[in-house]
Image 1 (cartoon, protein in one colour):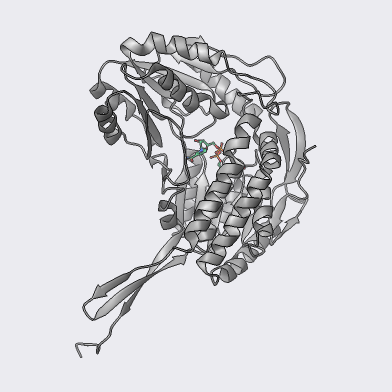
Image 2 (cartoon, rainbow, N blue to C red; image 1 turned 120 degrees about the vertical axis):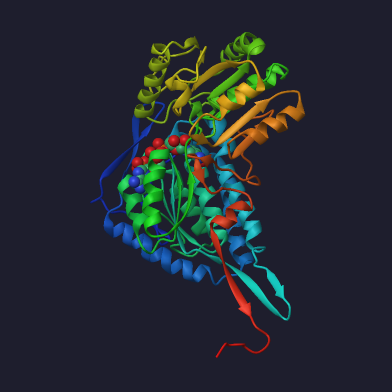
Length: 484
Ligand code: NDP
């Protein structure tokens, strides 16, 4: 039996702490609608404790060698892997995502980040720049205290993706999970502490948006990394700008997935399924505008519907289940609203479109055809299991249409013509692109968006740039030549 009620709401300075004066936040299991835990939003006193301890811990942590820091991160990764099943069950309670997913992409992905950045920590150096007999050397320094603010779709992964590079570079982090999924990040904090991180180095405070806002505007905070929607991103970016803080913004998308008529049909359908229905469609980089070349449209739709019949919708704790509920009742209502709009605006509903007749927040995998560029379902991020098929004739036409969006998170192409694939990718206005696949996100590769989808990159060596800064030191070997 998994204990879903945490020992206390927050993890600060190496211990669980509670302050019941904070607004209560009930935690709901999306598969049943039942309350499984209760936490409290952080009060000012809790936020203060988190800031004070993070500041203190960061000073100590920055004196450790990179190899010593890396050792802690790698030990945390190992603990996480050893506890993968328990962590995955908790992630399923927190989000409703089926265990068949959480066992493979949540704690394991967080562990990948801890392992990868743990390995890099000892290799973070500056450079030597010769200037005749003088020289400049650079020192890669931490930023200080970083704030991580998470969305609700991948709570364990997001905490790891933000925490691992931050800590590897010598920073401390205060992480605020989404109020919808407050449970998993506490485990990340617990494990990092157990692995040997100084108390206070990775704190978790719960809260609604106002707690995030308080953290972002505090002068002791040096960097803010948000995963969330564009409207929240705008607010957080503006608040961070006021204090000239560093930012990483991982925001929403409405990404195009282009399928040419020479593509392998099975693989293209598989890519579209991964890019629309994994995690019940609650993935920021999803390729929700599926542009299919005219001759391929009907075969594509036929095969897609056949394969959707194989989805096992049901109890997320049953490992045979492959499709779970929406994260919350609110998200279910939002998705239903989009489906109704799609029908009202004239799109052809070819699959799903309704709720699943069982308790919890289940929406059927849904496919619309005959979608046009101006329809709401083709323009707005839905964040649910709704795939739109748009047909196209030529490469030139589809490229213009694919890029005609404020977002630029991801984009994909399926074709047998590799020259065309690279040409298409070169033309995509998006940060994360795929050729003959969709939605892979290994820690070794940079992940992030362009245009309104974000600023900065997570994962890979690129993340180091976003969690450290360079100090240049000019060294003169001879006399100083002053004008007077
Ligand atoms: P939100 O933007 O609603 O919230 C994101 C986080 O920001 C939450 O923790 C939220 O707290 C907090 N927050 C809200 N207002 C403020 C504020 N003024 N100052 C500081 N923090 C604040 O996103 P969702 O949680 O609904 O997640 C869905 C969105 O996230 C989608 O748009 C999706 O595309 C995007 N996303 C992007 C990813 C990427 O890597 N690019 C990955 C995953 C999701 P609270 O929940 O308590 O309101």
